[in-house]
Length: 274
View 1: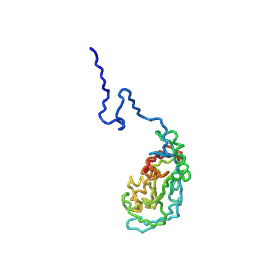
View 2: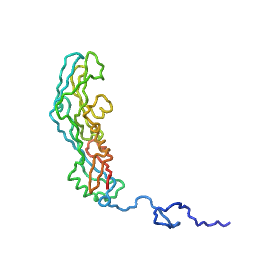
View 3: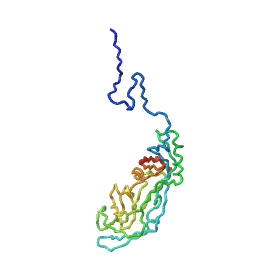
View 4: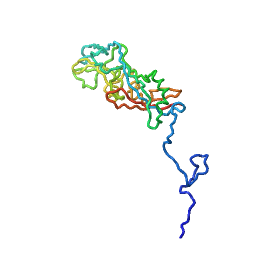
């Protein structure tokens, strides 16, 4: 028996071809290439990339006013009224090591993404030069206590009230925390509050924004907006870090910092307009 030869293609095209302009496809010699074409693309000047990765570094500033805070308290529920007074930023009550008023992100250089052409570094030279003239691309300014103030003091319900009357105020703005190698998620605001302990001694303490939100151990005063409690990582992931070049704006979407003794890290930006 002779096998019948078939002239029909192995694959059946039931819809439009990949390119509408082509109506005839040679069935016996068709090759589809999937993947990188190998062509170098001018990804900055004529067609700005959708994503840009930057190598950046952190720097910090510490500048605080001469502020005195005070609060009234009692050692027993019906006892004599006393007034505590404390210098807030002189280091006598709270260690000022690693306490800062501002953290800056400074541009260092553009970096090539895995899928970008090898000539990316030369393509972005113009943009890079502009950024180097003004390298600070973001300032995180922490809310601080700017004026001397008397704080309301309330019974501390976290301690069982007995013959010793303990008190605690609401949490108020203090500063930020920063040191070389710190994680981006730990660069955050700190708050302060005052009170009296079980030995009837007045105190001033600080608490991180993360602790204040998660533990709910102290009430946050109404002068502090929730957005003001963000970490630097929050700001980056929420698109608050921006830069514009050639009428194209980029906003931050992600950051990575794995170093322990360095201020250097990377930020990934996404194009938001053409």
